[in-house]
Image (cartoon, rainbow, N blue to C red; front, side, top):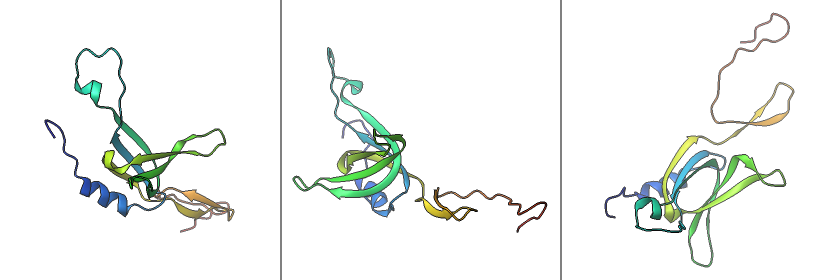
Length: 135
């Protein structure tokens, strides 16, 4: 590569293969670009840097060409049916992957209902009943 950052694909693959379903990640990749009225070929014309954060689902090998894809779901964007938006990125175009937090864990609430909690735990003091401290 001339005059640019060389991506270590071994590190990208190593991190992707260490992820578990539900890990919160940030992914950077290069996308195709389309431009009009170009007078000079420059980096902003050619390069199309993309970034997305979401929950890791899996890697998937597409059958026709054998290209591996990273499959992840949005944490804040829903489709028309109220389900998370799914993003699939070809792994060879990924330039950077960051694991933000480990997968979601099942946690039981005080009422016994199961809900999904994030990978980070915040310690809180819980009071049971009037004036009773539970340790």
